[in-house]
Image (cartoon, rainbow, N blue to C red):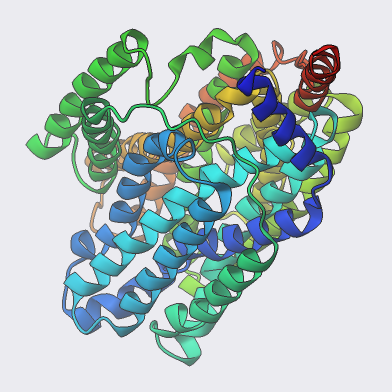
Length: 501
C-alpha cells in the first residue's frame, strides 16, 4: 500500500466535508485585528513623543521595527507551515500578538513599548501567510476569487480606518486605549478560532536549514531596514547603504542556497511559473505606490491644506472604504470573468488618477484630492487580489506556503522601497525648488516647495504605473489542475488498488 496516496486520500476526505464558513470567519477576525494594528498608532505619535520624551526619529521605530520583524519572519513561515498544523500556527500567532498588545498597553517606558510592538509583529508575521495558504487549500480554483476578495476586504479596509479610529480615540481618551480596545478583539479571535478552525495543512517536516534562515533574516531585514531609514533620513548615511548592501549580498547568497540545497526553506522555483512571476511584478509595483501615497497625501493635507491630523485621516477614509467594498466584488468578478477583465481597467484608473495628481497644487480643493484618492484605490482594488489569485492558482498545492510567503515578503520589501524612493524624490524636488526661491523663509514658499516635490514624486509614480499597465496586458487566466480533483483521482486509484489486493 502506498502511504503517500493514503495520506493524500485522507487529506482529500477531510477537506471534502469541511465547513469553510467558520474557518474563513476565524481567519478574517484574526487578520482584521492584527492588520488594523499596523496603522493604528500613526496619529498617536505626537502624544507618545511628549509622554516618553523621544524624538520623531526614535518614535518611528514603532513602525519601522514592526515592518522589519515581519520582513524577517515571513520567509521562514513557508518552513513553519510544513512543521506545524493550521491551528497551531494561527492560535500561536494570535496568542503572541495578544501578549505583545498587553505589553504595549502597560508599557511604562519607550523600550518596553517597542518590545511589545516587536512581539505584536511576530504574531502578525506568523498569521498572514497562514491566512492565504488556508484559503488556497480549502477552496477550489474556480471559487478562490471570492474568498480572496473577503481577505482583501480586511487587508485593505483595516489600514484605511486605522488613522481615523486612532484620531477619535486619542482625542477623547489616551493612546493606551489603542491597545486596550484591541485586547478583547484578540481574545475573541483566539476563542473563536479554537472552537471553529480546523487543520487543513499537510505536514512534511522538512530539514531545517539554519544557514538559509540566517541569510534570509540578514537579507530581507537589511533591505527593509535600509530603505526604511533612507525614507526617514538620507541615502548617504553609512547605516543606510551599509544595510542595503549587506541585505543585497545576503539575499543573493540566500537565493543561491535555495537553488542548490535538497530541501530549501523557501522554494524559489515558484518563479518558473510565468503567471506567478508576472503577478509578483504587479504586486511589487503597486505596493510601492500604495505605501508612498499613504505617506504623501496626509503630509499634503496637513502641510498645504492645513488640516488637522484627525481630519487628514478622515479624508483618506472614503478611498479605504471603497477599497474594502471593492475587494470581495472584484473577487466574485474574477471568478466569473477572469483576471484581465479587472486588471486592465484597474490599472487604467490608477494611471489616470496618478496623472491627475501631478497637477494638484496649493489651491486644490480637498474634495478633488479625495476623489482622486478614491479613484486610485478603486483601481488598485481591481488589480491586487485578482493578480495574487491568478499567480497562486498556477502553483501546485505543495508550493502554496512558499508562494504566499513570497507574496507577503515582497509586500513588506515593496513598502520599504516605495516609501524611501518617493519620499526621497519628494525631498529632492522640494530642496531644488527652495534653492531657487526668492524668499525661502516664506511659509507660502514652503508650501510651494512641498507641492513641487510632491508633483515630482507623482511623476515617478506615473512612470511606475505605466510599467504596471504594460505588465498587466500579459496577465491571463491561470490553467490549473484542481487539487481536490487530483486528490480524488488518486483516491480512486488507491481504492482500485485496495480492491484488487
